Image 1: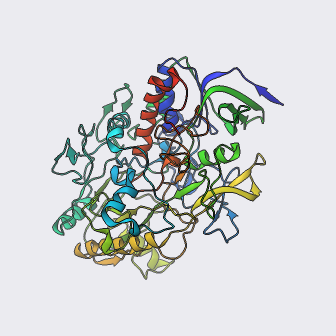
Image 2: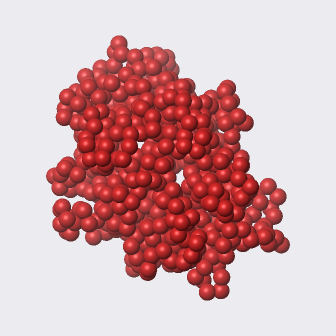
Image 3: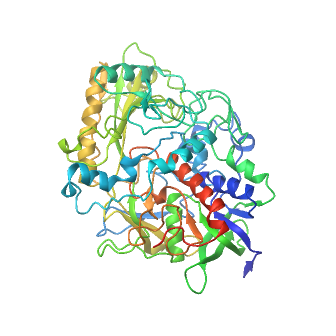
Length: 591
């Protein structure tokens, strides 16, 4: 039997970065907000204290902070002709679960996406001509501009305590920063992290070759910091337990130590953990949502939570799944190219080389998530001529040290035996004398990369699993070949003793090895209901009191990590909700 609860103003589905931002902002504005989080409570003192958190096996190998694929997963295939099969264990990406979501175990890398992304189709057509874009590439302008997001980027960076060096202050290029970034109104709230030896070598070599390296912007606090809300962050200790881990020092800008505690102090806010939302409910017209149904996973009790407004603020993949299960919006059909829900799923690609040096020592155990130097010469640099290589998008390149943890970090030159004394000797010799030069690459939308509901497999609630159809296309292969070549040029110029060169990812994408937890698309932004699920304010075209947050909004995926625009869009949506929508509910953009 379903228990119907008392109506609230707003229900949030998921409590990570976007849910936390909206909870903080909307409760402060006087609205009654309930957050439903399907995982459990997380806190630094109870979950991430030393020595417990430095458990490489538990957190890195066994993914303790991630979703459990035995309870809910996806089916995977590379193209529509294949049979999709369930992902039985986590691999290519690692969705978080629990209060704070993926914002607990992220590395902290925080980029500002600019108009090269937001106006991608119009800019490429203007520069290279309409025929330059392949017919099956479904990229589109987002309907928003960098100028509209700039103050909200700044607000998010100050909330998360981002460390970095501005490259463009109000149109003036700044020495030491990214010369290709869009203009910023202010410096980063914190100076860059310390520079690792690996980053120093990369900086010197890349600069000598005409590239423009700079410290990677990251929400790893370079010194103790109090953000504008009064939340306190400690200084990064470079412990090497960052990605896949919660931060023992509260030095990584995470929602569970910033926005969520402030919301929880407000009597207007209520958090319900272990609450798995199964459907968004609609009224008889189908034009307005009325709340959600959810199950308490600890006791199996089902509830209906009525609400004046629903916000999907879960992980990107889960937002899309809920929309499909709730039958809100028309599901995407790749053959007819109709519908929008599930459209434009994108991922990321990359390449890397490993360099080994006799007599050089990198201390890899002294690292953190964003301890990198990067170059943006082949990504946001609009002066870089892509037509020489025939692709759209690009990649950032860099080097640094994120970790040297005891289980997984075993750099060895090609040809090293897989076991025995020679393997042990090589592991001891090269542990401290190897570094990596890598690239993170964009992925453009394609008509045959998408989500839909699987016709065969179901989750623990008897609902269809979501099916992911994805593969790299020729655009990504062209970009990968070019960028791997650049990596190898830089790596060879660094004169290593041994080099395991970079190579482009070839063949079909595999869900098995870890690559990136940067899944985007499926409920994309756009200018009309025909090409998107939501408008520029993250509002559903179909139901005006339904809003969707997170990277599922992105019509394609850049080389940059997604959290910067995720946070900025959430803050912008919060402002719009407080100052416009909740005072006079209705469509914010005419369809």
